[in-house]
Amino acid sequence: MPEAHMPEHVAIVMDGNGRWAEQRRRSRSWGHQAGLKALRRTARHGTEIGIRILTVFAFSSENWNRPALEVSRLMDLFMSALEKEVKGLHENGVKVRFIGDLSGFKPELRERMLAAQELTAANTRSQLNVAANYGGRWDIVNAARTMAEQARDGQLDPASIDEGLFGSRLALADTPDPDLFIRTGGEMRISNFLLWQCAYTEFYFSDVLWPDFGKDELDRAIAAYQQRERRFGKTGKQVRDHAHA
Ligand code: FPP
Image (cartoon, rainbow, N blue to C red; front, side, top):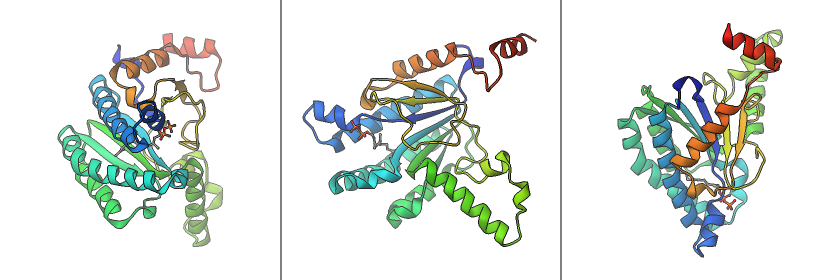
């Protein structure tokens, strides 16, 4: 595939772990473990084909409402994944970043997340953003609150608030918006993921359950993306004329 048409930033809602496990008469937690393997495969292939930024939805603000056992097993999975995966990611030049309200996690987990961020902060080959206790509305409200506090303290002129400034207060500030959003598991909704950042993102929905996702599926999503014409509000002719100019 030509590098020029590669999406720079891909966001993924990794849905279907629970159903995948239930189909095999195993626990939902077993499905999440298989989901972690799918993430490893996908991230590795993504880096190899030149996707610079991958943002995955690992745990939403709403996922706390799941059965207590599933939530606690997911937390254990995050702990062990951080222990086992971070070294390899670091050796491969991947910068790891967590987005979301990390204060919701127990201190040991939060510390591991922060340690992983610190260790990999200077890496430049690719970036893996893990959304944990994240919600798109939380992100926007958080940015609004930060700016309101700064305005109250006289550090920010409300008249200076524009899209650029607002975006700089969001969790993915300094990261280009996703070019491609992938959701597996057959549902066609955004589920409060990157609401602001997906204003012009191309959407790709797959019926494949996340644990079955990997190299071929990612290639398929990218091939579909490469067929799209991104217009950003312009006409098709304007976009094509500009491309050939
Ligand atoms: C959605 O499937 C998946 C999740 C809520 C968890 C995703 C987590 C991982 C893939 C592990 C990643 C680990 C790290 C460290 C980033 P679902 O449970 O909603 O599936 P269902 O729709 O079939 O019930």
